[in-house]
Length: 205
Image 1: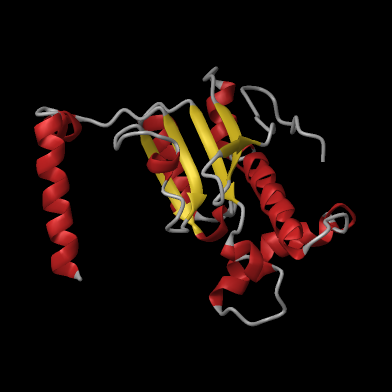
Image 2: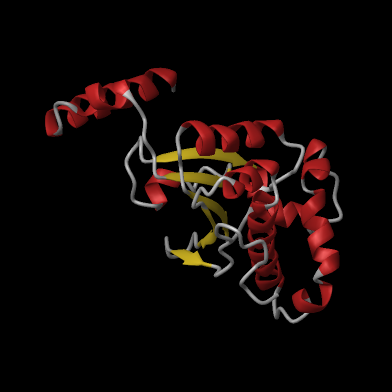
């Protein structure tokens, strides 16, 4: 399988160079992405592919169920680099319907370390239990919880000292919440954008 992967990589490199001779030379000199994407590790939701962007146009952090933990140094380091070094001004928290991490958070089954990681989603499920009870099917329940997880992620990113410092010095940065549909390939805006100096969610909960 590794040989097959390397062959596909070589074919892709040759094809890309044929279509755009200076492509790799340009990428090698610098990266100047417009977006910082915080997404799920799910292999079906690659950021640049679903957003229709080329490599070099989006800086990416991914984890199980796109959870924003305030103590996640990996995420915080990537966020700080995106804002302070790459001067990115558009941050996206993107979840997806049919998320396995969200499903695991709703199950009364052991999932090892994932149970600790997914605790914030279980907390959201308790917090919005009345809202979630309106869902007509277990799938709809999980999909609504996936949306709430994105909205919460947007708020948590906006509350980080990294964003607060950037806004205090006048940087115009916006944090958006999107959700991706596996069944139709479409991104949906959850209307929960937090922009410079605005620390409340716009979307009604």
